[in-house]
Image 1 (cartoon, rainbow, N blue to C red):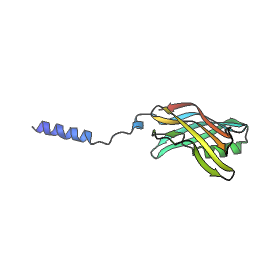
Image 2 (cartoon, rainbow, N blue to C red):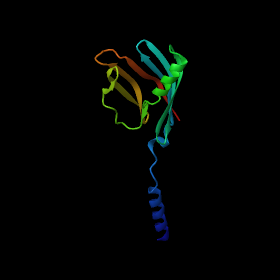
Image 3 (cartoon, helix red, strand yellow):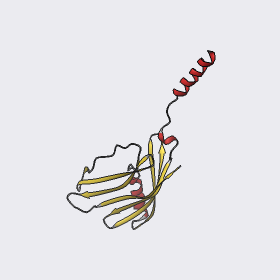
Length: 146
């Protein structure tokens, strides 16, 4: 009887442990290349998005393009705020509309599954009623890193 009681306590203790998050055994980071097109300007960045307790942290480093190094670095800092990786399958409704001093911008944001994460595939944004994208951002060759 004592052995059964101790066994039951061990089973209860084992079941009472907090469940591991899906990413605890999964990838820790995403790497790849980001391509940014604004009109005729093209700029590329190496990207690394690390999993952190509070979400994801993206770092972009300019690798090729037609803009000055200072502008490329400033763009990298701003682009790092974009949600390149998402845990959940709840994705934004498209198009996303926001007002700017130049007019209404409509952005289409597309994610794709990669392992247990949703990864940004591309973003296209148009200003006003123009039909061609004024802004195109794409994540090329994304890879999950352990």
